[in-house]
Image (cartoon, rainbow, N blue to C red; front, top):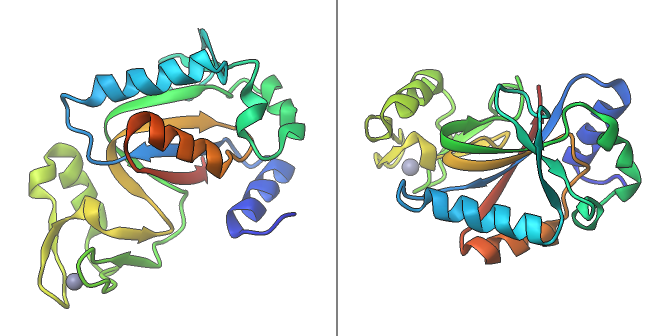
Length: 200
Ligand SMILES: [Zn+2]
């Protein structure tokens, strides 16, 4: 049953309890004007289906409150027998609105691929580019060393998979979310969703 790398990481984390595990459903290319509307669509759907509760609590890792799991949380995860996450303090859904680097963990990047030609530009100064992007995304362009195309660092493909975007839904310590759930949220929002997962 335990197949993919992410599943193996997930299980090893659960066993040794190294830290809090997060699955981020990230939506790219949402304009500032659209943000609240997209958030509203997702939260309304999740509450109507009782995947999350209307209740909020101190259950995420920042000063804000997150949504509590709802009575149907187990419909959207692959391993409903992992219900003990309900006993954890950190088990909420956090809405991240505003430019965010959705990260995996402390591992180094294997590749940072050009969106145009796929060339690996991993030796770029990505730390500085991320900082630039957070300050002003229009000034965070990287020119590919092979094809010479200039693209925002947020358009490059990272391995491990990090995503730079202004909207994400972070599920703290939930069991692995089903692909069908993510596809459903793509229908609800009309947008492509990228999943980032990692630990603190
Ligand atoms: Zn290129």
